[in-house]
Length: 293
Image (cartoon, rainbow, N blue to C red):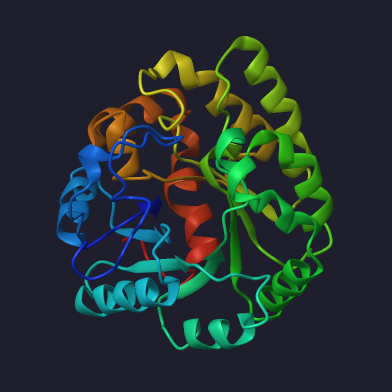
């Protein structure tokens, strides 16, 4: 099986300004409990207990994205028995993007790019990352990664789904992976209904897949029953061949243990879809040469 979305950090090797802020609650909660090193050995120990044999590291807001990517690549090279692809950061709107992408593609583990567009309404109003969707330079960056056969991990809030669908429909050859089920932050009945309607704009695009990840970021008291409507909707809209599992550890350790996370999701999903969700979709997109044997 493949864990298609997790992070690692060594606070002595790479600077993560957001992670080390003191006394500031973020959209995913208080980061204090995860203000420590989270290294590959710890993640492997957690994941292998449930049969995982490979993973995808996703960039996580380092001060220097290229420095983070190089650090992750070194980890990959030192741990050959654990296949790990990485989705690295690149500012696709920058006039330096081609140079940055050239450097990233020198790293054998890099298979895609993530540049976060939406985190939460409050944080987005300050960061202005939503404005990327109307940036001509960002569009050029998307075309560039499509031409380079890199994927794009898309993190947004539901309100941006329709606009994103209009944008990404222009890049049919670009593999787009929606992080965290499109971030359904409003867990009321009306909120889930609105999220599902927004999600349909993206699920109609055949080049967009969806991660069942980050389900605890907006509700630290989540249970199997509270996320069942989310998981069911994702499965219905995307189908199992465009859905994959991601632990989002260690961020999601703020709301559950790896054991609780895995068991709750596997209790919701029909067993006949396990191979697609836990292996096939991630394998097809992130590393087609991986063997689950």
